Amino acid sequence: MPRKPEIITTPARSRLMASVRQSGTSMELVVRKMVSDLGFVYETNAKDLPGSPDLVNRQARWAIFVHGCFWHAHEGCDRWKIPESNQDFWRRKFSDNRRRDKLKVDRLKKLGYSVFVIWGCQLEDENRLKKRIQRFLMPCKSANNDKTESAKEIREEYKYSKNGKFVLRIVKMTNGKRVSRILRRTTDSREDAQSAFYYAFLRKRTKFPTPKSLNCVRGTDLFCGCGGLSLGAMEAARAIGKRFMPIAAVDNDPVAIKVYEQNFPGSKTYTADISEVLDGAFGSEPTPNEHNFLRGIKDVKITLAGPPCQGYSNLNNHTRLKDDRNALYERVARFVELVRPEHILIENVSTVIHGKEGAVHRSIEEMRELGYAVDSDIVDLARIGVPQKRKRHIVVASFSKPLSVHDVIEKYRLDNEKSVKWAIEDLEDEIPSSSFFAPSQLSEENMKRVKYLHENDIYVLPNWLRPNCHRNGNTYPAMYGRMRLNEPAQTVTCGFLSPGQGRFIHPTRLRTLVPHEAARLQFFPDYFDFSLVESKGSLSRLIGNATPWQLSYVFCLELLAS
Image (cartoon, rainbow, N blue to C red; front, side, top):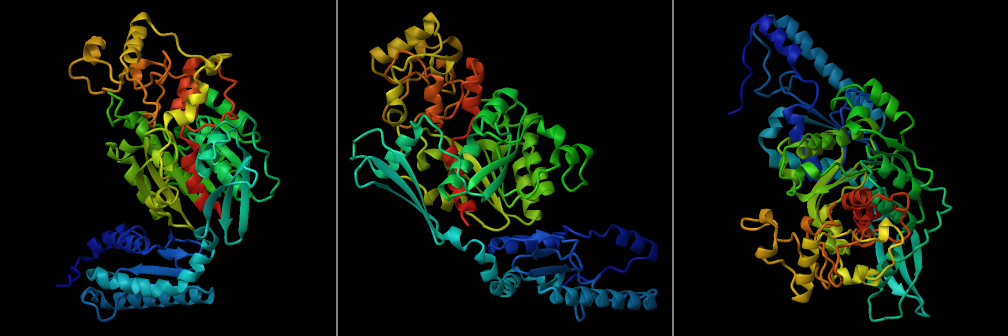
């Protein structure tokens, strides 16, 4: 039965009217989800348009109002009734409301917008309402798709050149094709072309020339570290003939910022705690610190972000999913609210969704409130060619190109996972000319453990050889483990220099990984410059915390190709 409005005394009614929400009502949230589920993007409460439509898409020129039946006087609806007291006042008020509503619709139509009004009572049959919304939006679909048509047709191909000396990556789009060419370092033509391309790419020692194209992709990288996500964006832009321009890279680690600047010349960097420069609550007016930080950060095409993951990690025994650093995730949504980039890509550990603060779920909902189409999923990077079993939680959001995380990963999925041997076999006996190439010095006890594994050709250290704290009841059997040569590596962490921090004992040599090998497993090409860092502790932190660039590459290729 439709719920009839309660008759309220005049003072109580005044208080009720003052407390009525102007935006973000429960009815609006239901409609937003319907529109998102149908694959349409929108922004909310466009205050610069007549009537501040509840949902609007400026490019496709449509607007939706969600009206409460009582306040907007829904004729013939049981939810609307003129109160018995002071009826002349209410008749005038409802007449004025109807007149204003009609004026808003007329003004929007004069601006070329299609307008759809949804009444609260219609939400009682959500299936029927969703079909009505779909019928309204379908004529606008072509306009919404025009901008993404070329991106939908994008695809990669890999092949050898006729003389066999080169391997080609061909990125094909409806508006033409781009070719990236790399000289091969091997004559083993039995390897498939895509594997050969990335094999050569990882071993390339000189940087690619900066594209001369004036078509720049203005990007920002929050919690940038040494620049793994930006490297993927740069490579995606280069593959389609564009130039990636980092106009804001932020991290609180000065060493990471120095490495970032070295590898992305001309980038604008900030050594700062992001919670101090973005210190306003979501939905509030910009603070003085935010005004100062955001000066000049505009027209952003894509925002990349890798918030600190240590608080969410299963290796964190201290706070276990409840950590002050976890709240930093929501600073990304605050940045998005203030800057409104066209696309957003956020990555974190797979356990991030279990954070007790709920920061991930709130951030996703906040971005949806801003009008972004948002999708999230957990992916295994080994599927897209990264030579390690590294699972990450991905959030992708866009104003103009709704993407499915699952579909993108499946599109770029490789038939064969890449092994430790494929990635680092050529580095087994590299001369340790600096900290980047040198192994850590093992204690006498740890060297005994390493030798035992190799002499017995085993990969898991027996319980009796482990330290007391790693014996009975040990939760992490990979500790003091030897890597398997013909499989992807376990997740590379900041502890790769120590056998007690994971499965980091080299498969064929009596040592742990060196930073150069860890960087390869993290998919950093040899031309990526870590030379400014001499401290092994800093090297292990930067490399272990980085995100393999192939992850951002596949998503940026889809988002930026237009």
